[in-house]
Image 1 (cartoon, rainbow, N blue to C red):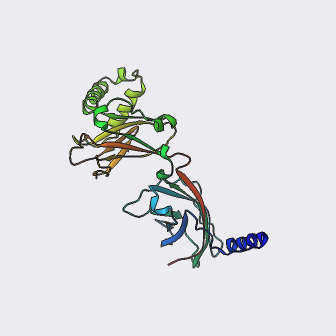
Image 2 (image 1 turned 60 degrees about the vertical axis):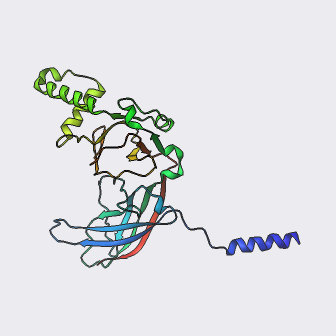
Length: 280
């Protein structure tokens, strides 16, 4: 009887549907710009993330390893830069696009596109999020966080007073170029790069965050209210060692800062392979 029960269990396990992959990829819109003069020529293929983890993704990027049209032409661009991580634009998953070479004139489909996607899922690793409650009260001091320490990352919210003081120093250095050549120090150099990279001034409501991130672990920085809801900002930009978060209204004193870190457990890599993608 025991053997019969074990045999039945094995049959049921074999018949059960396999669990869907955590991350999948399907093709979306295809933009075909075949031109003989190669001006703005190329092929753009949209990738859509699927699977149970797609909705959790705070960022993703895709790297193509093989792309061949139905005539056998290689569509992979040689020497292309590694892609940046894309972030969701709304409630959905990040939108990904592959930038490929011109297909052959007579090609009607891309026979194969394969590579890998990297998906940032911070909810899967507690060490992927560092938080600082009431961060405005601790400006000009590095944020104390086990997650930041483990990733060898230092994050400091810079006060307006410090920003104005460093900007004034920078203006004085520019008046004495010969002397400024001998100025040393990581903080001085970092602020100099900030001022040179800015188009205009930092607004009174903006949040300036200096990130010392030698391992390139920081994915993003966000501000949340006391209820744990993200505070809408008017955009953000990165200049050198600085993240600048733009706000139209003053950030509440009880707001918290969250720093997202790309830890090994929070970045999931999955292969993908698409077959016979039709060309328009």
